[in-house]
Image 1 (cartoon, helix red, strand yellow):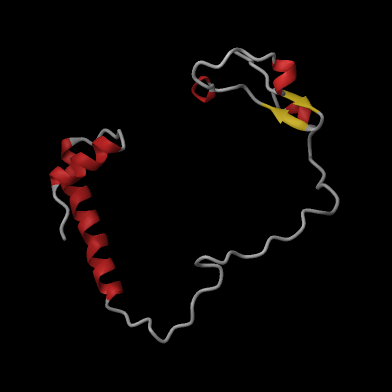
Image 2: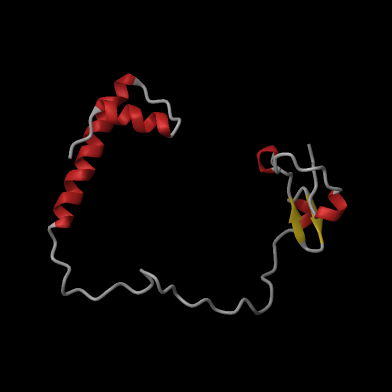
Length: 115
């Protein structure tokens, strides 16, 4: 399966990326080269290869998050907009507010609006 300039334009549109017309032939060539490489890899017989650890439905077990906190070179107050109870408070993004939600007192919600 080969990629065409029309395919690249379509994918760029879906990703909302601007691609200059003079860059299209180069991108088509690069993507087709990648697909050729994938076709070669598909031919490799992996039937006798053991499954890779950590891949699949069973994940690696997590260790306990314990031990002393690593010391910082500077205090959190020197690089964070605000700190409360050891947590960094960052400005709320306008895109992350619930639609139609009533405003919540920042003190109760644990968030701050810095705008």
